[in-house]
Image 1 (cartoon, rainbow, N blue to C red):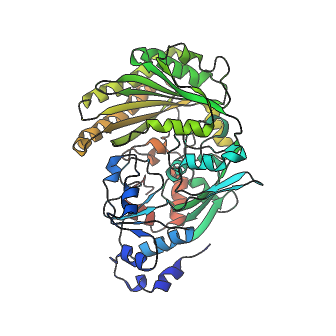
Image 2 (cartoon, helix red, strand yellow):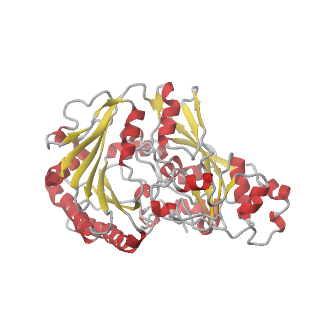
Length: 493
């Protein structure tokens, strides 16, 4: 362990400061990177959020540490104040306060942007300030890649701490399963490494544990062979063919045996739009006959699929990031229905989403999206074989992880959208429960996927591993520093 206590002693100010010392001024005086409102760096960082709601939360100042030691110094300094703070990686999480903050301190990891590939281990050390496309590009010349975001502009930190679903997950598990070491600053400002031989319990708890244990300043992750090009892109299918699409999603989740194939099936609704956008991926020059036939036979009105580099594909998917909108995200987990009951179950989920969407469809700029993300046992079994994670999905059943999104223009719609979002995910959970009670779905464990969860959802209440993580949290942060001082996150109280 390394300690940051020398920092407070060296500047000689914080130790004697009152509880409300101006940390921005103090750190600026000590030569740290501190950006105030209206400076170029501050405004650039504020504009680097996917949701304008997060961008509208303006911190009192931004701290941009250049090293792990500087992060430790900041944590030490925060102990001498009562400031709330947030830590930002890529800024793609739309839950207000998770990576954004009003009036408090924002710690931007943008300068923690290292990409250091080790040819001996084929691992790569990456910083939390990166986006996945930057890592993929940084190691592309090695002929290898990483299990990361399906859109290249997704940030690294929140993705890995929340689990991380990838086009490559059926081959290699969650993104978190591919982390072999976390360098992390704990609540007492010490720097430790967590891996399979050191701080093993902390290592396990960081795989889906969010921001409850410390500030991760570097991830060492596995790389995988990727000297070849891949096939991927989109099918656009008219909303009138929804029943066919839902059947194809269900069948793909159960019957696809090719771990190189992956899909995300999204339905989009607005006052003028009713369509499906399917993201298809195959880790090869082209998919073998039969892999995506169920979707092709539906008759897409547009296809953008082609062979390209993996980097080109994830960058291509960035076009689906809606800029200039507020948006919210939520999730539910559903066991895969069998083929006999599939049509009824899948349609009930879709219809509930449609009904809730219609209730707020006239909110300015409203776009509603539901994504069906197959979670076959090929993914969960790989995750288990790689040491597991906090979500701990069953390996004997297939699932579908549902992502729910509303994007819209103005803050005046916040209340209506919040109510609709609660109605959407709670109603969906009730529908799944009813199908379980009626025997249409198996009665199995159903954790939530943190990366897609709404801030009001009970992430920890749905995890059977929560108590193990809570024990670790008490060990590394006995006073609850990260529980009480961060402005957002799924609290492990």
